[in-house]
Length: 208
Image (cartoon, rainbow, N blue to C red; front, top):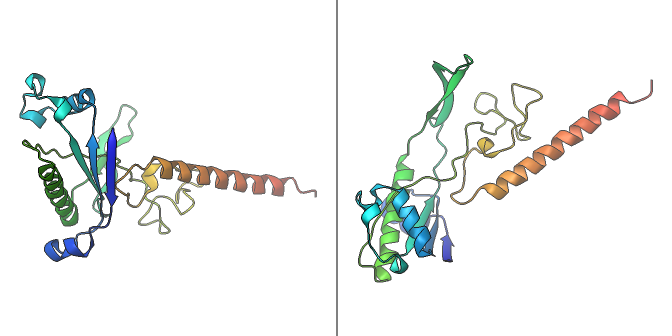
């Protein structure tokens, strides 16, 4: 596996052609081992026009260009409660999501960039596919209970002893892997819970 990435905001040059396009963050050229590439292509089903199972392309000569972009925060993208209930009578979640104009512009710009890279590399056949990865959110962090679920310390605004420390608290997310940031948030939250617990315990133990 060999990988080369370029991280950047979509800068002034892109804005001249596309308006206020922001947060297009990575272009990755990846040479994958043939078996993994074939498995990934087959899993997409329509990637080879519905003929993935019978495709006899020499995968050793195939490559992959992956692009990553960030979906901008949008208050209309949210989790709410539906009228439908589960087996326990609890309302189930309703997820509302759609791409905004900037998001769609990023997808198109990335597709064009990917094709340029492959054409420059001498590709004779180019296939494109869309996908989504790393989808945090639904328990947004903020200082206003009207527009967020937890405070800056990841403590619920509504439930005093509820702390949320995963990717759901992110107001927005970068395009690349979120795992280390989630771990950092969880570690910080655990420390805050322990510190507050120790303060409460110490105050209760003070002699009368």
